[in-house]
Amino acid sequence: MAEKQVMVVGIDDSEHSVYALQWTLDHFFTPLPADASLFNLVLVHAKPTPTSVVGLAGPGAAEVLPYVDSDLKKIAARVVDKAKQICNDHKSVKEAVFEVVEGDARNVLCEAVEKHGASVLVVGSHGYGAIKRAVLGSVSDYCAHHAHCTVMIIKKPKHKH
Image 1 (cartoon, one colour):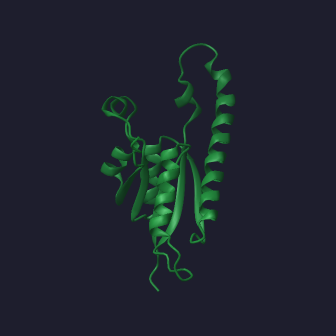
Image 2 (image 1 turned 60 degrees about the vertical axis):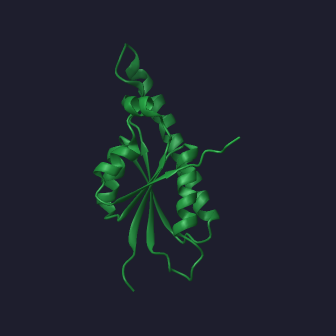
């Protein structure tokens, strides 16, 4: 049997990320005979650096960094635990690799694609408007232009009232 391709899924603490992971599992990891899945699954969470969160402005910033780092580690652990639970609940996922990598999500995800030789990168779309996207930068847009593989951007449907 041919070696399976690798699918990297970017995860964070947003509902958009949870939706993207669930959508991916529902569409690519359907109940099939044992080991019939086409992909090995790698889930990657980019943990921001404490300095990127706090910035280096003002006196006393250095004293805050250990607390910020501790909080970022707790958030990363929650994100991974939630993703593990979603994968465990989805009976078709036999095994998955979970990684937490410190850095900017755009770079972390593109580097994960290279590291694992991924053929697909899945990211959720936060649905930012043009102004927010211009100010914050779009992880999905960056990855679509820089990742050396197919990039799927999963958008959570808007519910009409």
